[in-house]
Length: 400
Image (cartoon, rainbow, N blue to C red):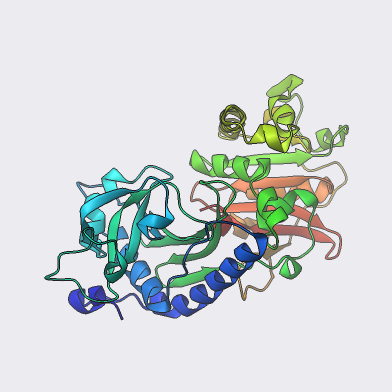
């Protein structure tokens, strides 16, 4: 056990419970990265290191620095494993007080505090000898470029931590591995075979089984989902089939904000070649367009988007299709290990948006509805032919 636990007397039971499982998962991720030929590949922290990092981050999340909640990202990596590291002359101890004090300097997205055992830090950059011990962890500085499969721990909110690993394709792309909220632990189930059937558009949100699907998960819907959650007002996005007007049977007319001709910038960007997508100009254009469309979801009503990402309307009001029964039950699943499907009244999932989304998908079975709640929950509604009912996928653990 690392010294910070002994010195502070504070323990976080969830850290001890989840650490062995995370160590196993990251060992598997590293093995897969080597098979793919990725370089460089991160070092896997041992169980004690994982427990120590989670414990320090948890207690830091409950502190305040001049009234602000600390927002930090810890990466288990040595300075030589990163690019252009900013190194402290005197590394900081991995403890909640030190993390809280430095948090304002590293709260911007993409900046990580590097964590590494003091005994393995480069000569001249190690911790003060008076308090150094073999195997203890120290924060050696900051970096924005970390190796593939690097263990990353983010403080998202008080008591809310997200464990991620670096994808290895681009410096700012990650896969969520687990979410810890107080005494609740959710380990993301990354096996597609364990997920109930769903349309292709849902795969980009829940599949993590292969390098190809990792790339797909960076797609347009994921970015739209993140943008919808980001504005904090809640929102509803309807994805309807290309070339069909059947969706209009489930919308109140006239539509307050119909778009004519359809807004096609996102569709055009999504059709660019992989080489073009690597250009900074393309990434900036995509981000700008996604945020613009995400902002439309803050307006009361739904944004209507085709499967090829053309915007048809926003502020659209959903109505039950003529002759269609009211939805009384939906199946709910969450992509976490050990989760079992439940069957609930759609009113139990949230407010009007959730009820409307469930009804729309029930009546327009080739469509998908994405709902962001003001409290951060995110649900994808699809029609399940196998169950013959609406299927609600709770996916906020993938978007934190």
